[in-house]
Length: 474
View 1: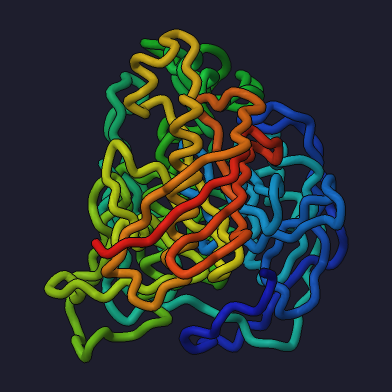
View 2: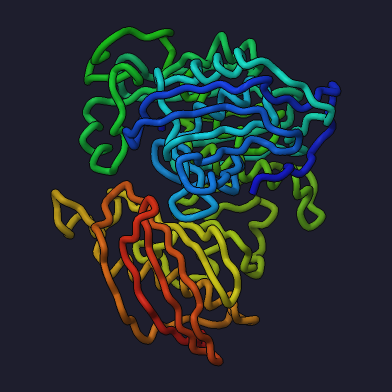
């Protein structure tokens, strides 16, 4: 496997369909695939206009996490949503969202006791069946659709996508694995409740036995077993039998349905996906949302929009490719926006995303730690941990963005750090961890400021520091 609110309206309601929720609650229990912890999920009816919203009912105040692409975190082997408070993130939501979208539900509370829904049998069928069994409650408001006026193309690593206007959601998915049971598989699917239930819902997640140790070293697949995944050996299956000979491409299509649900509206498009990944599909959804909501740019009409993912290539529209826009500090920033502000590049760019920014006050940033980080080759080989100085450097880079936001002409400036005090490291950071940096401005005088920073993994403090920095002309 690889701010609640009403989404903006896009496109006509077409057939006059009305928003839907379920008639009564439905609950399922099990273990999470990646974190391996016991989990319970309860689907509950929600008022019209709520949208699809997760609630972490195991945490004080049951913090809400809207199922929208602006909450998506680019992570490995799963789709993850960032929480609205520390430690309230949610992992591996793709199967749940595939079931919700395919059941054509527009408003829904999804209560989760834990940081990850249960994996159950590794497919979306248990969720889909539970939602269908809960009945439908039809509202008065019209359904909201995401519809395209022009093609959208995305390349993210080996994943290639094209989305074109259509009257329904149709997927053309191709995968290619060097394994005798998979090879090259292709499938075309129309995503309606009936078709999804028949063709995709029961397709299970799959993985390879020889990847087990590597993935578990990253903190993944801790709850995986032959009861909730198709496990492949070098030549065949570790146990059991396939539900379809092409169950693998069906499951990849299922994952695409779940990730497309992050549009926050019912999607009407024909999506062609070659070697899809969660990260690639999330990138596609971001670009589709821009295309549906933003309209033509700079008076340029017609022609496809193309985006490239975050693996060292800029993600932007083709109509923007001939000019460099002046960077704008927004409350949230992706990696392509950050690199216009931070004067660092691989392997020393240590921030992946800014989740929140309040100029002159507070900032929250993310760093995903993977086994591919270059320093793991020499820093405790066989027992990889992230060097503490790099945790502090990443924290400082996030703080630098906060300081830039306090300056009108920040594009002509650069931040230099002057001092570090009260630095403490609380626990090791390992591959698979996601670092959340929270920094607050404690003092600012002219071009010098002081900040207090804390780094957390899964809500637990791993490092903290007080730092001072100054701004100088580039």
